[in-house]
Image 1 (cartoon, rainbow, N blue to C red):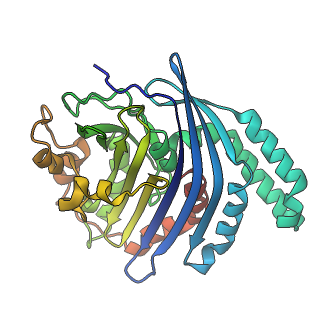
Image 2 (image 1 turned 180 degrees about the vertical axis):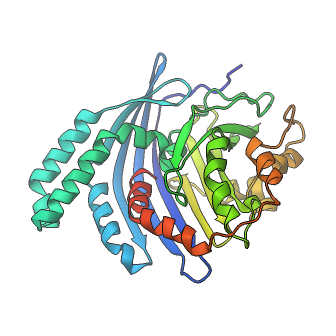
Length: 357
């Protein structure tokens, strides 16, 4: 039976995120970092969860000078709307976003602040077109945002008396591939480690891909053309870990790690952590994971830690089985072709990632 029932709370958080693109052994990696100070208000009314997110400050930085114009633009965007009001259902899924207040914030910023920050008219027109297009799809972007996956988790239907790994806790989520053009990766989160302690509830989740066939159709031709890499090099996974206050299920500390990889020198990694202000998070970070500090946690890893909660009918993910079956196929595409795909997408990817997590 569902045990987790969220309650009202107010919390102040610091959110750190980091993304790294590796685009070939001969190219320097692209690294972007960000820090956000925010507040989260939660109020429960019957079967609805009402949340207000207030951003107090946000900074975005990149080491690569070519990304500085995009970062500057994104810092503008971060300051247009400081408050987001939204509603979630009892599982934690976002059901609606107050677009009226977002539109009002945008109109005010456009009228009163844009001229000083973006004086050139042609850049203003370009910025307006881009922002209003993003505003139209804001709710969808928020649903798929990694940062908001962490801040507003769909975990309230999870069972933690016994953990089977059989039922997802989320609806299907879509991420545009950061490495392959015109490829969406669809997935759900499944629990793989849940433990109740006296003053702490620990919950860990891992993605399982839903559209394996579509992904294989895209990636197999790429690997066939490159003799240096095999399809077994491909990987996509997201791991989330939550440390919750069991009295109201407020997040005390949470982490998210995403890896999308064609091979070791062509990959995209995201690390996000969310911590309540004035909380010593080191004991939480080391509480269970101290033996696995440098590993990506899989369901199999955690079965060795959580021996009392073994999944039923454990099977390798479908995509893993299919990838292994293709491992003998040869590949001829040069690494630079894959890099070209990435460079074409890079500008849009940077904007989407840093706006939506």
